[in-house]
Length: 437
Image (cartoon, rainbow, N blue to C red; front, side, top):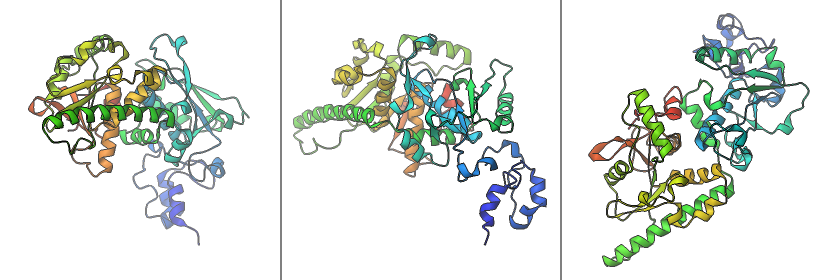
């Protein structure tokens, strides 16, 4: 017997006999009306639904992402987390077009203007390729350039720019790429600006799904584990000394928690954030070292001695002042003081940043700046972990995150949980002082 429930899923998006898009009115008046309760329920605007299957490639999709149609994007640049957002946006663009994304190049070095100095690095030198496809199976798909048949030259899609290139125009351009003759091309190559600067058409939860699929290769994850182990070892030693003085040695080998603080106080950041405060008329963006220390010290429930891992720019590693001035009972460590600089120093910028990110992600408490992409993506991932534990309605005690640039309760930093219902990633990409805790 024919499975009408499955057919209705396909019918909602496409006329399976002809491969042409049809209107909801036509579906309601035809075969769908007889067998489906309402094949177009909630889909009156067919053009705004991106989940569709093209009949010409059914044999290559198994009703999933097409494996014979591809999307190429420019080299992904800038900071680690800008690159992660760019990659996710490229993935979601390929999902909208029902195409497989050809594995893009990331950038190992950090240059914002001197593009000729960028050092490309393959995606699979940072993240696990097969693991990504396994975790994102049915949602998006990544492929290697060797999978191209090269039967046709790519269709080059020039991304618009400037104020006149609106979100609506960008969306219309992408819709045109879902139709023939453009869709007939084996590969669509997007040229122009960095994907981070593309218009955003997707909700936070879709980006979050992509981020969940990004798993560091074992080599980098193992390096992060070494750093975390060193932090906990330092903490355990400090606690042992304290407990010995208190004649209570029994708990000295227990799991030692640590607080990770992403300190944005380097000169270029302070210049940027001051200008941003002036342009946006928002005062809660910049934080001095003294303000960060004071607010971290007022986090409720911390048990001394408190081990701090300071994730700071390499330019600050020679500045001893980042380690001084902390209240009694707080013991700050950065890479050099921790004795793990040799782990970081053998890698380019991107991998150093990935190790820092992982160390902050695994922390018992994370404190960052809500206008930093690095901090914002960590808060997002920790929010996902909290939700997975059943804490979707409150900030919870585990995986807690704070934004030191916003004053919270008791003089401490504001509790921070990402709004997973947000309709775009704008608050994470560019920062916000409206955080949901």
